Image 1 (cartoon, rainbow, N blue to C red):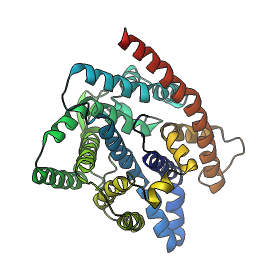
Image 2: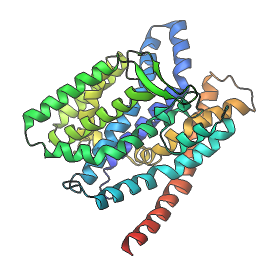
Image 3: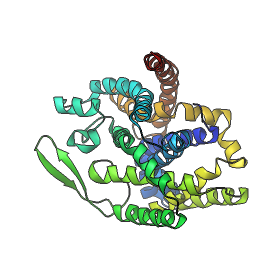
Image 4: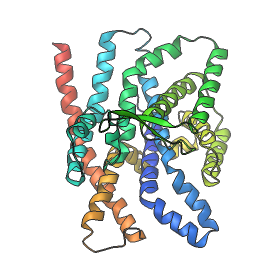
Length: 357
């Protein structure tokens, strides 16, 4: 990537592994906590808050896209918009399509509406997401919808020249995001041909319908705002932010506090400090490289191993879960090297050739 910052790529890898651990270990962790309590209460908090790593993905994407496109979208035109959107599709769709086709082998009740909404990446708006084997694709769907509007969000925010207006927008957005935890979410039921409602979970763990879309939009908008306005963070503050972030997750603070700390953490990684050097480590950086594969693959791997399980391992046991992580990482290396990299190179070559003709 032209404007790649290795520390942010590394952080993306940590976020992908965190989401995987959340999905794999949440039942195991909860059982340990219920049985023994004590220190397991804190480890359970760490694992059960893993869902918020998806929001870290959103914020990271907002930072990286802003870094790449803020100058290009100073003026909106169809040519620049088309170039941006096609390159986004080339980045996310080939592997998504492959994983979706594989998931059909494990999917029950496949309908035409299920296939159409998943192929068009609009499943987060519909009841077809409910019961989907690879349910983690909800975030790809909301991001795809967001991509349609991102250039306009970027254009609008960078047209604002007043720091006071910027600050007010950030405050209003954070308040709305906080209140979103209490909102019910609404989605379209294609089977019933009605608008359905799901009650609030009193957290930001919202994966379908109106609230999921709003969650993604606000997170992206805040990412752009923080990128624009937060200039430099002293190294000692960066270290303190990391410590406070870890404590916030361990002690199960409100999601909004963790959100705010995410923004400052990412901004601090744009500088040369101990954290950015750690996140740029070769192993962590490569985890970032394969993070998209990890995120798309990990649920399917778990489903497949649960179904076949040749050694009849306890599906909630440590050995089975660690095996699942190992298999996910190995498959993700393969899909990154063989599908992601090669498809991106191939389709970009075709697109650039047509664009130059």
